[in-house]
Length: 572
Ligand code: PRX
Image (spheres, helix red, strand yellow):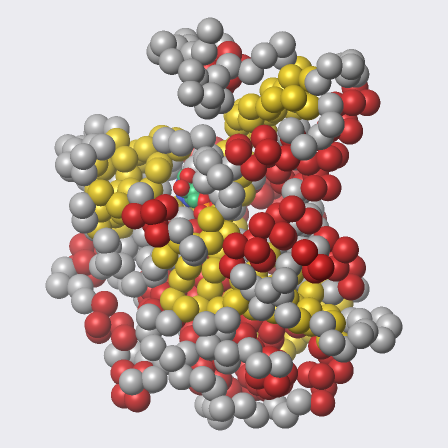
């Protein structure tokens, strides 16, 4: 079989033809499918949950199918609506108002989702954090966003420097096992149980704030990518077209809500479309994920290359132990999807795996392989209806097919970020004329398929997680033995890239395995596990430019044995 082009399967897809779907496309038409078109009122929590809870034919449908080691729950739209109303009442009681930032730092659980919608219902802005974050990562985000409130659990509390965050007024604790002081710390469950389960939702404007996701860049602290309720139009539409959600689907997005995929596609796309959403807590193993697919008869699965590569390594035999006959559609996001993985999907599952490309900043999918399209393994696909993509040069001029350049998107799609929190300069730096410039390099072939080539900056993509080298370097040099540090991404067959650190030692320190392990753990416990370098190498000096910038590109060339290119700016 020719694996360079995999034809579309026959299917009753929501979106049937790529070309015609793009013709005369108007986002305004999509808006008409929502009730705000009639009322002028909007709130994504209403559209995702309450609307279905008000519908007598839908209210008892399972919205959230939760499973984690030792816990399993099926929660209906009506139940989720009521629970989030209770949360909203508690937030209101504690004076949370429109536009306030309320952060969530807790495991993926039914409480997380009820809280998330409770936050939106009072028109506050939700800030979900990865459960794996350690103190520095938590502090940076709460400080920058000036969060007034944090929802967390006692287990995670020692990673929150509450005393050093003056703007943080309240900490709401789920599963508080002992009495809490009640002034700054609140027993959240107790208050939720005592709260009314009806709530007058705060209606907001399409352009009012909904969400902040922090993400890494190549320099400085993580940046707060700010999204508004308007984004839901695109979550809903891509849920229909790309994910192909239909009434009876059982959908599973494996991403954590600390990552934008876990909100745009783990929360909004499925629930705006009213389908049953499987949410799985706990750790990844190929067996446990296969079990989840089988047990809940998942029909649509959205996952990531790093997981898919692990399934490939786990072998074909393992797959045969499970029944995946109900599975009909698979998608991937976060890193380049290797053609080998697509071949594996065809061979072992009998299904094509559809790559999708987008970013935290773009809020929703932009370049995709629709079910109705031919797949070209290795390509990210084509822009969705209502989105124009191009390859541009550094001045914003469009380049012809097959020429490499900046992957850029014409401004104005609904789910585009509206700001970088507290940092207008950074926000502006993404744009050249009418183009949003992604920071990815790519080319487009004659047929309009886009092919990812790499990042244009030093951002590292390890197992689909964006890690900024600067953050890791900053943490490394906080270790008493480390004098200077330079951090790069090193290609890795399973993780895409791993983090490799080059360091110099302070006088009086001797290189040893124990010391390197101690340094690694220091980053892991200070920042987060995914930011900890898997390899650390000690050097006599770190290459820097004359202006003192670490030359990561040079470190990378050395590491990979590549030509070092222009080193004229290298410090003597
Ligand atoms: O480099 C691209 C890579 O991930 C970056 C975005 O990371 P993040 O904001 O964490 O992702 C949010 C959820 C999508 C991009 O700039 N990336 C994402 N999808 C793909 C990809 N690289 C190659 N192929 C993809 N499909």
